[in-house]
Amino acid sequence: MTSSEKEKKLRLMLRQVRDAQVQAGNILAGNNSRANIETFARFCTELNDYIRKYEDRKEVADVLNEMPEIQYKLLQNSLWGYLFSPWWLTASRKKIVTDQIRRVREKYAMLELRLRGITVDSLT
Image 1 (cartoon, rainbow, N blue to C red):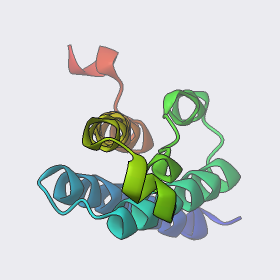
Image 2 (cartoon, rainbow, N blue to C red):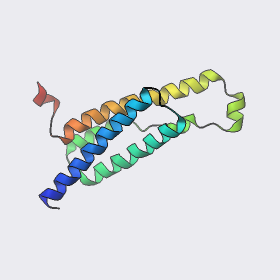
Image 3 (cartoon, rainbow, N blue to C red):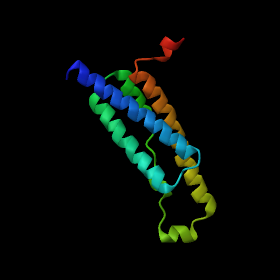
Image 4 (tube, one colour):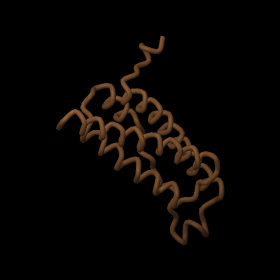
């Protein structure tokens, strides 16, 4: 792969990582329908796979390995679940998924720094 191809892929990764942070922020700000959460979770999975395929730095892989998988299926209910599931169970499941999204957003912020070549040590 040529230097310009690597640079192009890096710019694409950075743009997608930034987009993931914005999407997570939108969900955390209240745009948190099941469909939005599922779409975001699938996007994150595909983005992480893409980054793993084209980025081989250890510090990037470490952040990806620490990133939680968003368990969006916790929010899926059957008809019986809607009828008999207590409201607090649904609320607690949504809180679990929301906490995962918050952690994913934080990891993407760290990943953006790593992709740019910035480490915590270089900031101090």
